[in-house]
Image (tube, rainbow, N blue to C red; front, side):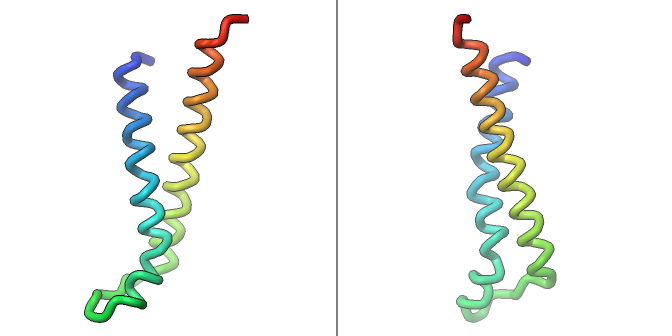
Length: 74
């Protein structure tokens, strides 16, 4: 994989982290702010948030370990 493509994938994963945390907390946000439209399916947004967060963290960890293994001379 080219370094540009790998860098793009890592950037997307890093940007998904705050988005996923927002989706996980959407029920708390809508409950505490008056006048905000409530999420029609709070459990779905939480599940999607957890899935995105888990996927992004796993990708970043695996990508970092691959890079470390590639840069380590044995």
